[in-house]
Image 1 (cartoon, rainbow, N blue to C red):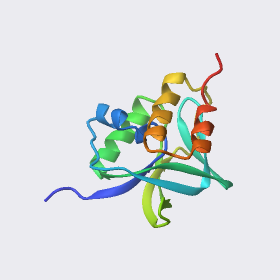
Image 2: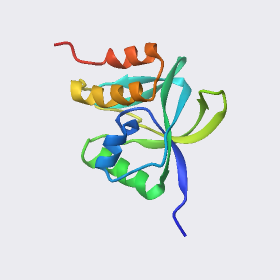
Image 3: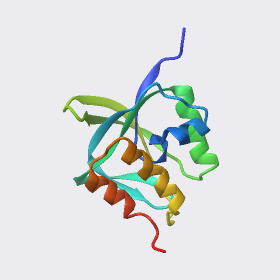
Length: 145
């Protein structure tokens, strides 16, 4: 019997199929969804902050608990940030509700994003055809040279 998979909402670099492939994780598909009630913050890593004025675009992917553990152990041990799972309710492009897990860091060390990191978020945002205004918000995190 195969391990069950759970829907997970990715909003940062983990929505990038190439980043997941580097971790030997290959979701069968991605579904574009929106998460209301949060805003994205991109410092040296991406994170979500509760906000009644914003929404965040991302993708749902089905992953096993073992895959999620591997991803977020990497985030903790290699990247230095602890992300914890939260249940969320996302909305598809067609207006359907999709429950999912979403990993959010309760606190994050201050830092500045580097261009390569921001581009690992912007590239899939374009690939998945997020709204132009949202891609512009992501690009605003690019460091000024």
